View 1: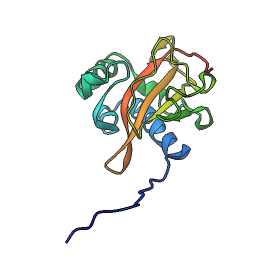
View 2 (view 1 turned 90 degrees about the horizontal axis):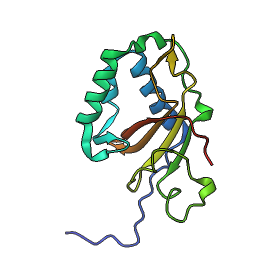
View 3 (view 1 turned 180 degrees about the vertical axis):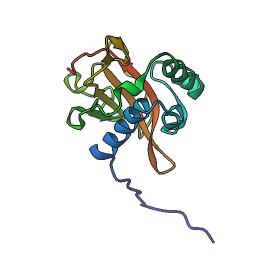
View 4 (view 1 turned 90 degrees about the vertical axis):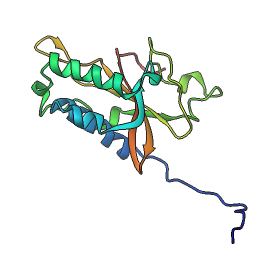
Length: 166
């Protein structure tokens, strides 16, 4: 026998700063250890580049494979690249049309990505982007995170040049 659920509200614990920082640190550690498998393991099943989410995981994997082949990210091993207190994040509701411009992140030249309910936009400035003059990263990691399989994972990945938030 089935009965219709009435007046049932399912609450999900909001994603906290620590959980977001763990994902950002995991991304940095995967780059520092030059582990494509670790990077891919952080992705949702439908993840893609920030500027073209529809291209999917294959596009990210190939881009990352080329970068790991071209640069020695292991030279960053042991260096602190991210400071948790500098990580900024906004849920999709905070970025909606009614959000005040002063509270919206500036991702120029990237526009704000299309986001789905439950997703979180993360802006994480990197303390170090170069080694011996070689550019390894953009100034800021930009991630769209979403819960998948009970874990917080990356739905979109990008890097931008440093632009202060408005």
